[in-house]
Image (cartoon, rainbow, N blue to C red; front, side, top):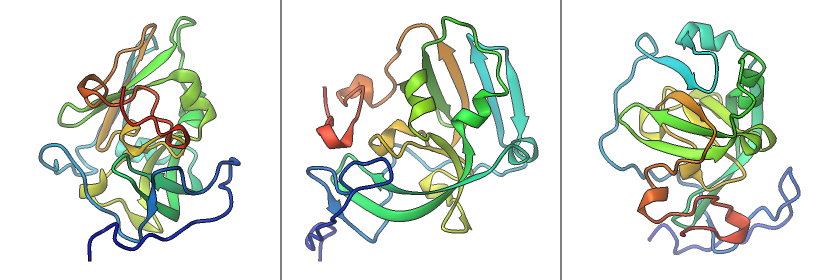
Length: 200
């Protein structure tokens, strides 16, 4: 049976008041792997996270990053290819908590996520603060698998999933927007699942 053969309606609203199932989506218990290019093998020993641009440059090793405030968030995951997973528990560092440790210049308005392997994606700084964006290392009590972006990925529960980079290695703070990999290839710059903003 194909992934979308069994269409399961999802009723109710999510924790921020939107219908749990966005339009055009189907519920699945699976967690399909959709990646452009090879899956990089990154050990926690070699992992490092950096910030640069309109911010005082800083860097963290894995152990240093894991000492930052940790949060658990039960939230849903929406892929632009029409499938959604529900009720997973994501664990990691909230972007808003990391932001408290940064000295950002006043004219910084956008954040570009940079991943191992060269992938980038973009979001307004204010959206990253307001929308529960998280650096995830654990899902449902288990370390995030490499094929899903481990050891660390960005999770954007209020946007389609490509707005959260797998294998995150750093963030660049900028005054002007700069579309990332999928955005320059025709995908929506805002990616709101409840407005079905899949493409430009």
